[in-house]
Image (cartoon, rainbow, N blue to C red; front, side, top):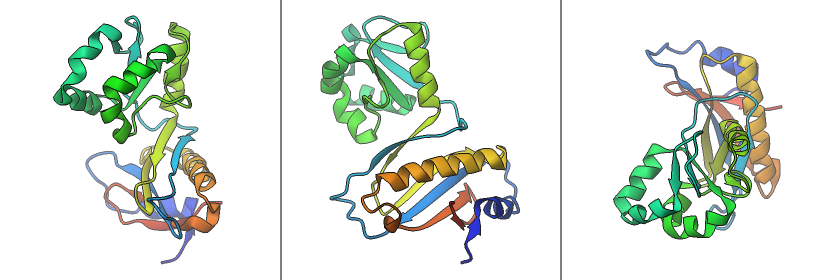
Length: 208
């Protein structure tokens, strides 16, 4: 398979059959010489261009007018696993006031943790509950992607087909660089890189 640069790759992908819905642009990074069970790779990548609106819920001491909120007295109703699972389906990200984190971990950790949705110091834990702090965190979340390595191939949506090529390319480069930097042997752990639309075949590409 011939390797194309990012611009050529997108030209190729845009020749594929048009669909009745807006397709995602997926970045695929295939890895080598890495032990998935022993090497823990969790990355938060910043993307210059927003891909989609993310649904966020907050664990706070009081109700927020900015986003859906679960206050501490309401934690009890999430003891049922069904309620927890519904919560995870409804939201992409969760944020928490720092003082509540021990109770958040105790109540929600068993479900949020495995789903990769637990608030973290890098993304999700806030020290103040004012509107400005919450909005700043929401803006940060809107331009972040969480990547967890579960197998020797990472596939992550980094754009939509109606975005400009330049915007998609900027997102690809940012996410790829974040992934490469998190790998134990950096570029030596990368077998190859591909891009695809939701319904298209992958095209091998070069990220430079």
